[in-house]
Length: 335
Image 1 (cartoon, helix red, strand yellow):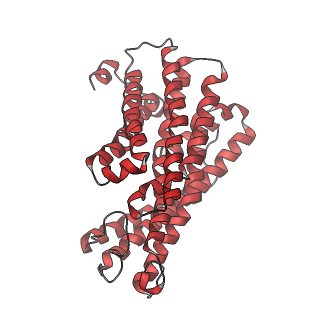
Image 2: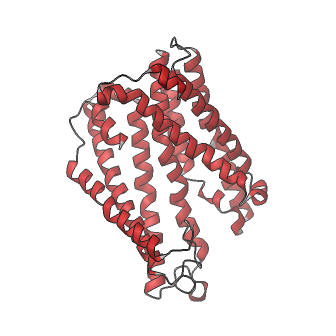
Image 3: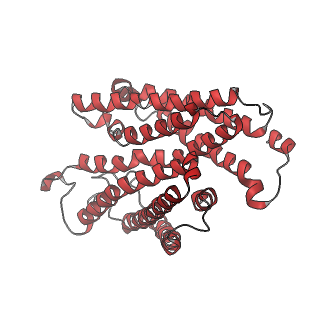
């Protein structure tokens, strides 16, 4: 939603490149929600990960599961269409507007769209194979027919882990954009450091899906690889955090400004979640902490609090531009 508003605004366009495709991606969400409600009414007791054999027709014969898969399919197609639209629009912006290339928000949305475009087809393939297993007697994930249920986990998490970066990367872009505006630092340390750190996170984040599967029984070398690369993600993430702090400390903005408070709270909570992620990246510790509140805390410190705070910051920063109304600073501080 913010991308639909911000891309034309920051790129100097009147609309996205493919408005009809944009409309289609929005309308596809309605049948997706309807199918989701159907699945809730019929019952789909397979958790949110769809793991076979629990999701196979042998153990879960409710048609609600099929409706849930159709819902995911439509939502995935909607996201793919939006990603194509965003990439085409950003290509036009970067080609025709040189000054727009210095907008970190636009780069964040480009990286987000690329991640979705790469990973969503794999999830769609996994769900389609599971649908065939359930309804047409195939055996992609059935060991009795030569299939492998762990294959589904690999395909699911190949999408599932980059998805969390899809959710947080626009937030990274917003925080970086505001810090760059507040700091008014003309050097290249801020922009290029943030840009290449974000690109590194995208590349590494697409290679670590196996850390969700340490308890499955991965080969030792495979587990060590996923564990090591997961730890390395802490490097570009640390670069971003220290860059934000550097820019805030060297800014002339009033430290009592509500936006600064929100940004500092984002940095603190996100860093806390990131440190717990480094702990969980060690496969030995992950085996001990698997299915505990520690994992729940790690995920929600990073995603729920991080994404939520970045959305609040988006509203505070762009609300005067969207509505023409200025927010009351005293009330924002009370909030």
